[in-house]
Amino acid sequence: NSPETQHNVQNLEKAGILNKTKVSENGKKVRKNWAQTWTVLHGGVLTFHKDPKSQATGASNKTNQIVPEIQVDLRGATINWASKDKSSKKNVLELKGKNGVEFLIQYDTESIISDWHKVLMDTIRQLEYQ
Ligand code: I3S
Image 1 (cartoon, helix red, strand yellow):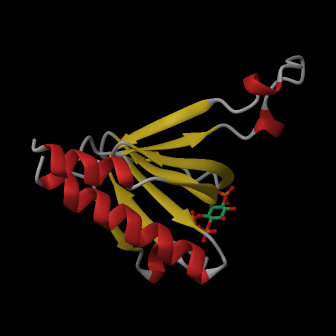
Image 2 (tube, protein in one colour):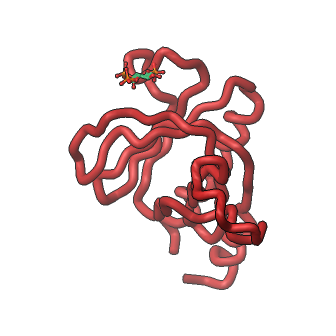
């Protein structure tokens, strides 16, 4: 746990809109539910947020509108390009968490999804040395 590696993982930060769906939970397949999701990488954790549009409209405070939904600890996770049989969509990544949770993440613009692939790979690799 050297200060140097901590520093490196802390530097691996990214945020943006991606399409995501869970495909497995506790190692069991679940039905896909693709949704556009505000996605944040910070401190070795990937957080998917609820779509503000899908939430109750009562809250007027803007700070209430972006609600963390799912957090994936990237320690021990794997990230790979998904094989064609996993989805008919293009540019699909498969993220497998250590606890048997599995997501597909996708974006039509290749450069955007490639940047995510790279930063997720770098983060997972850095976490191995902590
Ligand atoms: O792997 P699947 O079951 O073909 O995934 C598709 C379904 O989840 C579909 O919804 P229904 O389960 O209501 O049919 C979605 O609309 C599709 O987007 C899913 O396939 P893709 O290839 O888009 O991941």
